[in-house]
Image: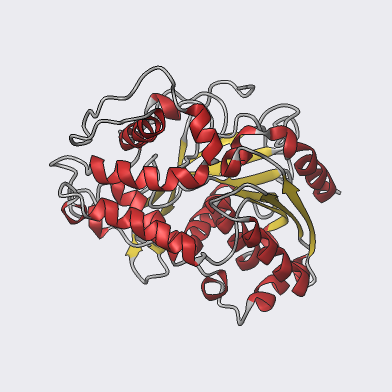
Length: 387
């Protein structure tokens, strides 16, 4: 339920020709904007700020109602309601009566932050395939610059579900002085072999669509078939298979539409085709590829310049961080073993932490749908961090 009301996306310029943004690849951009939203009020000493990282295909719009973001053509009706409405607002997990919550679109994203769809001021053309490759560390660096822009030196907490949790941990270990509490939800550390295979399948689905044209498709038309297939490949890991069967409409089969000649033969097939089709309207294929590559290659030890995980997380110990790590027992995207591995690394580095397993039939999507399983624990660690 939306208890935040109407909101608008804001924009911060974090790079200029005088101070360009340098990616880990060594490439740089001399104009970068970050799209972000805020909820609640920043207190006088700027001590109540929480940074929320969105998941893979999420946006800066975490709460409330936002009918439009003029800078992007991908803002469909599906985007208008906040993706974490159940968690943000008065009395909720991220209580807007107490905290100032910030959520920003990834650099490289397609919801207003500078990304492949953006126009390169040097050429007047869209960046397309020329947009730099991104890493989790790049996302963190861009949002540290956003915090600087907002005048926030230290966060009360950093929160990140799913792939957002990778950034959550990266910020805590690369900028330990910038936060007090760390709340990674249904995430991990290094990308598993299984996830790298699934990500490769999605990459190939897009790149083998004839419409893709090596990423230069903005004038000729998007690779909808490839992007839709990529979304279907990923969707089956986000949603518990039983839930897919329950959600499948029992009355109407989707026509093949713009997806070739194939006619769905049952409601599960129809449901998956529908998920793929509607996604192509709200996301950019080049951004999708950049995030796939970011996730596939992520290694927090390498990106953090550490010797090993214990060296990396010792930074959190020295900063006095308190971690709250959530696992979901029926998660097929970030398996429970991945959170267990993160917790083992925290133990080895003697970092204060609480490890909780959520029992849910909703799979990875649980962190979006079941606030009652998470909120009391989030509220408790935030209250503790305020002391």
